[in-house]
Image 1 (cartoon, rainbow, N blue to C red):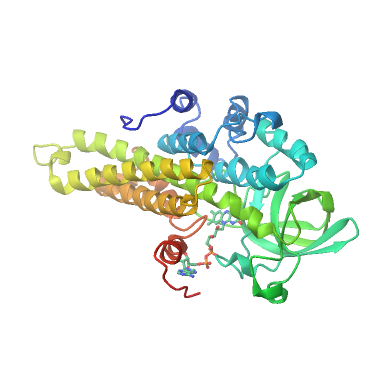
Image 2: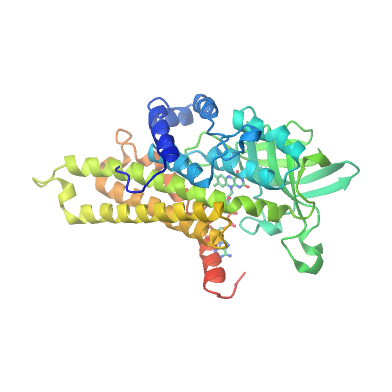
Length: 391
Ligand SMILES: Cc1cc2nc3c(=O)[nH]c(=O)nc-3n(C[C@H](O)[C@H](O)[C@H](O)COP(=O)(O)OP(=O)(O)OC[C@H]3O[C@@H](n4cnc5c(N)ncnc54)[C@H](O)[C@@H]3O)c2cc1C
């Protein structure tokens, strides 16, 4: 699709590079990996060589030292080639950011170069079966014993737990009920946990989301974690994780608009070719307008995502509002584009030959995770409109 935005030379280079490597590692490769239950290992190695795994990691720690806008362009472009990966959000975005902002220099030296080089794969774990969206209610407990924390609890939906070398684990050192002054944001502690540690057990989940990294419930039973693996301050873990939530929302927005473009482009080509009443179906406004509308919504979502990235980099007070709005706009736009594309394809929407259906659950998924759009609207309602909280 033609690019309406003004990209910097660096961003243009990222687009061109992704366009080139997806000749070999595009949508078909992505889907072949999923069908054979394999990770996208060759693509991951290529991403490491191109410094894309460490795109936001500072150069002194082996990364490319670029910003959120470049990360967003990278993810959008992979989405636009039909290659969405949850590992882009976990390992490339969520894992390094709290460490970059709050980790000791020793932690940064130990882990960031490995993330950038692809030698270390990180999972991120906050979700629990009984807490869900209400992360403050997590029960996974880290109790201090000398130079170690002893961790007990369980996390669920943990992407890539089987291939992870480490997990960024959000625990509670003070239970929700015991937090001083009732400030539920306090009492959390973020730990980098070696997945080879004794006491970790994985239970695979059977989910119908085409994704090369699988999901697991992870049980922690008296797992010993050295105190030096703590990121930032004991009791401030939720606040440290919050630093990465806006980037995760921006990344999700970028993947969503990219996937929307992927299906829209295929639908437009089909609508130009397919004639059933002596004229291309794309000439009928019942087909054309939903596609045009999808284009409008995707372009607006891209602008919002770009502004969210700029606000994040500038530590602008509107950064959270923009990141939430971009995530909402983009995930809705991506899913609407999917709907318009499917209607355009008619019965062929379900054909593997035209292959948009493999992204159907993915465009839907981004309305639910990593944060559901109702919570995004709650945030907008409370922080921008000043409406009272119901939960
Ligand atoms: C494929 C996949 C991969 C994932 N990977 C990871 C991972 O690697 N690490 C990790 O920690 N988590 C991961 N998750 C978990 C994901 O972040 C959660 O599923 C998501 O945050 C929603 O939480 P929940 O499923 O518990 O929904 P619930 O909290 O049970 O909420 C269900 C629904 O209720 C509604 N709702 C809830 N509260 C409110 C409210 N206050 N106001 C209005 N509506 C509300 C929303 O519509 C929401 O969708 C993954 C999930 C999936 C499906």
